[in-house]
Image 1: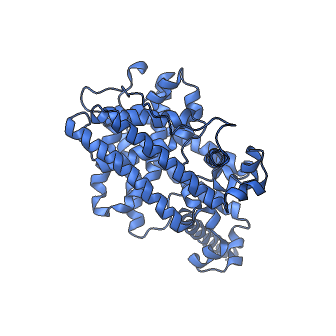
Image 2 (image 1 turned 60 degrees about the horizontal axis):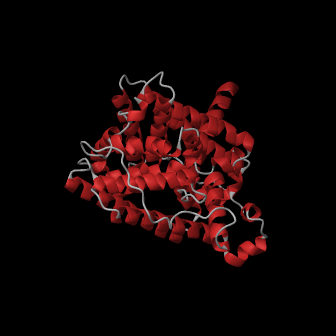
Image 3 (image 1 turned 120 degrees about the vertical axis):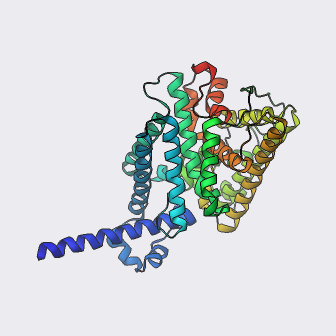
Length: 415
């Protein structure tokens, strides 16, 4: 009887622990790690704050458990999809798993795929196993597109995996704009864009160089103090997440005092908001310059993609990753999301123009634009990958090729 009681107690403990993890996952997605407190969490699960420490004595341990749960689900989904016989079936299965999860959550299932943006803010001992698991997931997804591929073939497959994973991370955000009754159609259209790309028949990768370089960042030591703060903060937040980009680190990177920081910004949140504003100003400027460059719709889209991916790969001041959204207060976060949607809508308009003139395939422009945005957003994470390619222009082409021709067609350089 004693053993049965202990087994029952262990089972109750684990169920309650999972409730805590799921509630924490929801809170982190809503409020970010910074805004997730034991008091708020306790209220969600019907406990008091002290009781939470029975399951997790420190917040970092709770955050680690949430990330582990997300990565375990992702790895299972990737392994299950990889077991399909054909590449197209693997892609379909992986997309379907994410769409089905979102459908179940809308129906009331608890637990979410948690944004992984702040893994790098954890202590090294906690961070390393999580990053290793994510690398395994990338490997599973890369294998969707073929085995025993090496050199540039492996490089382009890595880019495909990177873009596909980022698209699935972004799906929970923009899926909120649709009814679950539209999910089957959305699933098919996501597959269509990723499988076949955007370029119309006879179109290739021939972006035009854009003359207006106003969106390029200044090199270190150039520009005014405000620009220097924005550049340092953007790079540090992209690398370390919001929590890891402390005021001390940002000030130290610029060799200035904390007092100098607070002379220009009343709080770190103000600086993050300013970084978003600057990033979106630059992205908008590239879009408009591409439209002004003329040519058909696909030429304009390719020109914008080439410039923005190159900026993410090589510029001293990349675009701020949307992962930093979680750290902003809700009112500022809302205005940033509105701005992001406007930029996505501009891409949708460019796609519609290309469909009209025949240079872009007949895709759903709204869905396609929501695949373009995360691909651009995530390109910063591929900087190391880009640096290993034979030349900068080829790195941009290999990365953007998924959006050009889809994941099942290799660029000419790879064949």
